[in-house]
Image (cartoon, rainbow, N blue to C red; front, side, top):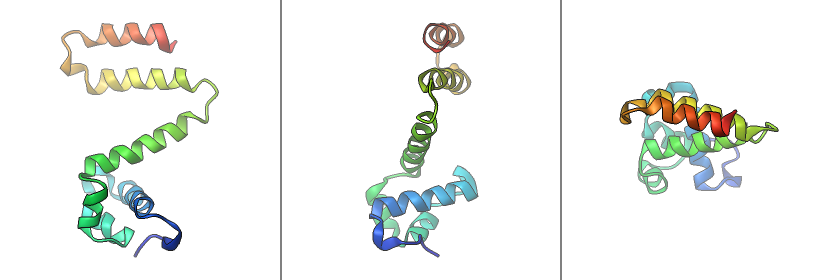
Amino acid sequence: MSIKNTDKLSTEAKILAAAEQVFLRSGYDGSRMQEIADLAGINKAMLHYYFRSKDLLFERIFEQKFISFFLKYKNYHQVLCRLTIKYANTHYAHQFAAPKPIFTAFYHQYGA
């Protein structure tokens, strides 16, 4: 199976469309680059030419979805700030000596 209307899409667009489907269906850990390449109708070497790793590919899709989601909101900068702080506190707190006060102060300054 491959992405529909492939003649109208660039190779990069085919890859992103295929990767989005695979990530949604299988999750990040269950996704394989070969499956994405097959769905995009390209070989794995071509996929790695455009995106050197699954991390970079996922990051690109996440970034696109993240931006399109928040641009729909009138006060998206406040929503973005709140979610960024929440994400940072959840996923990066272990990397700092006293992360919660830093991120919380930032949130109160810019996100409230």
